[in-house]
Image 1 (cartoon, rainbow, N blue to C red):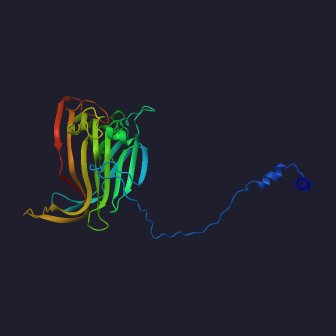
Image 2: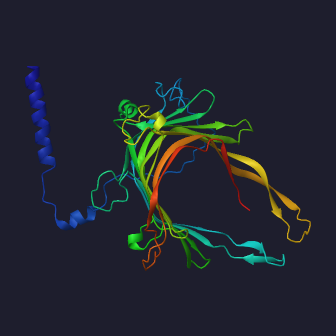
Image 3: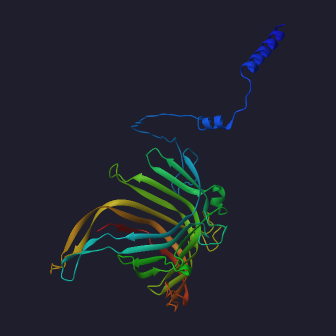
Length: 364
């Protein structure tokens, strides 16, 4: 009986609806009046104030090289595939005061340094063939962790980290500068108006493999606004070349490795030997430099204090190197004339060690 009442109620509602709202054809004028009437409108006036946002990492994370490569823990992981193409990068020196032969100050315009056809990516990044393989820097995995001391630790490896350590899944990289076939120099010196003065580098090309790299950003104990970046890791250059027209010198078949590491960390994929290891620190320091005073016949120097100079310390860098050397300019014509072409011979360097080197960069 209840079922019958429900059916009767439903039928009554449908009948009432059909009679009250009979279907009618809508003409074009009515539809045009409705255009743009649907949707949602929101009027908002807001202000958000946040004093501080703190992300707290849990215990453990990637450890610095070379002590312990793998350490499970929390943090952030990023998979990366990238290629960077820059047609030209120009640094223009600002106007500055120089001293003429008599020691009088003269205002000089700044010249330019121009880098052309910069390509960074996979080992074949310079290959212009559509769809060419290995033109992207890919298969990279970046693990980011903040330790209990507030140091930022970054570990760069591959998405197949075990294969990475065994040398079967390395990261290939490539860097090219200049394109002489198209008349583009890798590095030029130009006058203030942009006129080319000297072609320093015609072409440069480097390709190789990258092993595990650890980067630590930490405080150097000189206050909460001062710190340093420490980068350590493994790499090898499989093939490289550079042409320096101004010197009449060319290098080809360049290989950088460390035979003492053959068979070690990630080295199986490097045919000519093991990967080389590097450990460098970049820091900011206060320093001073001396400028001879032309008007002082005694030759004493005037000292200038420099704040926040850039300091590069090379803690460890010991490599083996092979290269073919060319000396003498060709008789080519055009924008990049005098490119080096004559072979001079082969050079091998065993245990080239520049560990302990310091480099300071500052403006003046």
